[in-house]
Length: 498
Image (cartoon, rainbow, N blue to C red; front, side, top):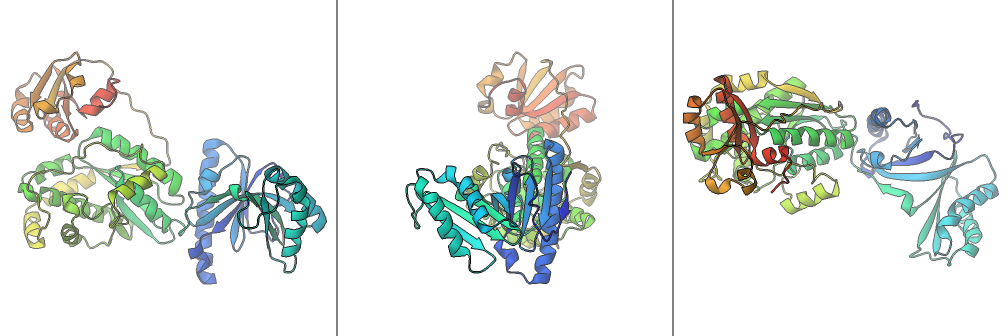
């Protein structure tokens, strides 16, 4: 059972074999006025409670949460520092050994000696005391130092091998060493600064953008525009779920998928230099409508200046004019290598989608310095009903619920249709014991309706995007098809990625 309270005394009667944590507040919270700080503490308290209750259901541990004016305390039946260090608003997570304050100081020092002795044996050490009651700090440091000195390698006040911390409060004493202090996320509690709708692709950028927005107190909804790559969608679902469960404590758990294959078909009718920018425009316009429905305060993206053609400074300023919402871009001035380093640091690099994305409709002679007037004139002719239809077909997923495993086709039969150039066909695909035919996209689009409807077709391309477009046309005309990226198909067969 979990309990929440604001006790005048610490829960010192708890079993000392339990894992006991002191959670210090981030510096930003401590600088706020008392009424404002209390609002942030209320939000942090709710986030902590929800987080611990959710993980309690997953792992079966018991806990108690206790609130004070300047910190929180948690007792738990198992170690949970990996959970606590990912909660925004917490500066440090300190695992402590507690001792009641109603005994004499001498008895307390003997208990401290018993706790610190294994840590200082044969090592240099220093004692650091932090007290609420004036006049006893030096006494604690000197007396405990005298008790530990005979078992150590001596006192070193500047660079000790072990620092023995004694935190004395009115309700009790807390003992810990530097190795028992873990850095938290800092920042503001999630949801304390409002909510935003994050355009989420599952790559390296959008998950890191989510972490940075969580860190400054913004709750997030996620939206994914499905351009027809099933492998990317699975990665998006798993990555968004992982990010929300580990860092978005207290935030919404909603991921919205918008089918965008039909929208892409319409965008391909526009002049090629503007297709990529036009796709971003409809992303923003669709996201704005969703944000209004969700009552979100802003949009958010993982865009960074110069990474792709649509993210030049000029193009980003042009894109901003197509939405009335403020667009948060926490990675705007972040170099790509720094984003990669952040992904490694937070354990997101391996989870992120690193295949080819289909959002680059055109690859040659694209506009990097677009003019708003020209792009706006093109978008006036875009059929708004296509975008509205895509929004109406949205699917909503709740990220705190388990991902349902889907049955995959295991029978290897049919014909492989590869869409692309001959040199793009990997050698592993040529070794698959199925008929293999190659087409360029326009050729396949023109010829596919004349193929045998009794057969089954694996539609493959490097990204999975063109496969999905072709599959939609064929399925509407009664064909049995399975669109995939080449790597997704090989992985489906048990091949290692090449």
